[in-house]
Image (cartoon, rainbow, N blue to C red; front, side):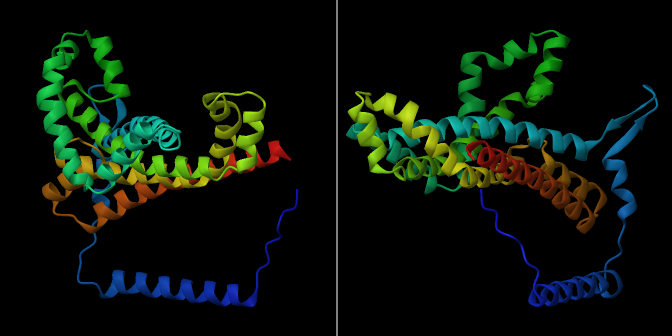
Length: 294
């Protein structure tokens, strides 16, 4: 397999030096000339603290918020992938009704702000659906072991319904964009693939399952990775319904300490690390898939 060699030109060196000089100048202005009293020493205590009663270090609110963000992003990503895959396939079926269902879902979700959606789902799921199904009573009646498992996988019992509302909102919102990615991937498959599989006597669903979808998923992996990264970033909107994820914890720390820039720079770094890890993971997966095909 041919691999393009990377060359470093003089222009690359000049641009890099200019960017480093610009970054150094910005840092200098921020540290010397900015009329702001930096207080980075306050940040570590909100990451970890030593519990004297148990004699060990424990995660504090920022790490707890980070873990909640990861949980919410993982569940929302899985749910969004399911929504997007199903509706993406529906948008390419021969039946008009199926295509209309998929199109309605996409247009409805894409044209409504996610903040509005989260309030709709929060008041419907938390205030109406969960009490109707008896979910809260079921969770509260569980033993300490079951509550610990639920807390590890989802959230604490008192915030469980709000957590589910946030997951559903982010998943439904991102699922609409994944739908279009899946649809575009399916439609990008050459017409000859459809004709050849039809000539073999395969039904439409067999064509989709065995021939078309495996090829389409390989093509849509890069844009799908971008949407999964967006899921992490969009998870911040659930802070408005008091889910104690990273952004919510940052606002709480800022309100109690009046330390602003240090808190948000720390949170920005934590979001950046999560997104970069996912991005590098997807790049590794793409290279692995390319080597397996060679």
